[in-house]
Length: 263
Image (cartoon, rainbow, N blue to C red; front, side, top):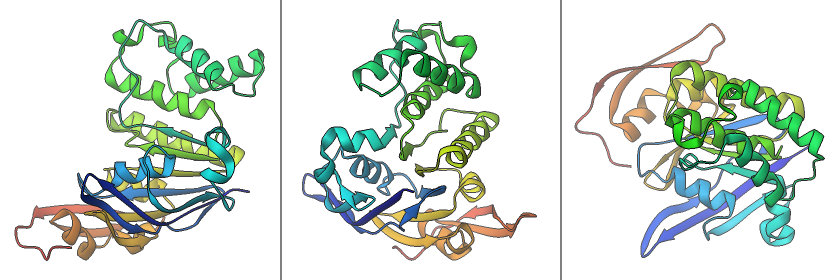
């Protein structure tokens, strides 16, 4: 059982206040939280705060234990993050990158277990055919999938994904998010994903937080958050929201709005 909490999160760049006392919903096993918001809303900064990459005010904890309680290694044993930027193009092979990263992190896998883990992840992500191709020969989308494979290989209790599908076409976006949900069902844990696609967020997330200018505008289920009023306020668009056969919201964007009350 995993419980992830983040309360009162504030962050600064220079003198600019980019996150203002953000409280995320408490997350427990098998839950996916989507972070939504326009560019510069604070999504990536919040992800860096949650991972421990950026100093922050507030408290972030896994099962009641903070990063200070666990220490750097203990924290990163239980939490893994996939950054927005994919692995750099280089002469390294994806399989070499996986093995070298695993050994650098001193993951508690035998060679056989690690090999099986890498093979399974590559197969699920469609990377088996490029496992021995230098990274510089791969497309940005394939390198993004390698970045996800690096995070999944660690089998973390908390997985942070910053725009995990930005370089992928619709098919692979759904493959990635299907895999994330499958792995939660198999081993538990929680996922926090910063996303741009509203309909994918509605389809795959249990909870959504809508950010604007470093503050939470709305938080709750997809149906509670993805309303025409909230979307007009944050994205400055007129929308119509319907429901699919499972009751999940579908957002239909009608037109941009010029005059919207600022958040």
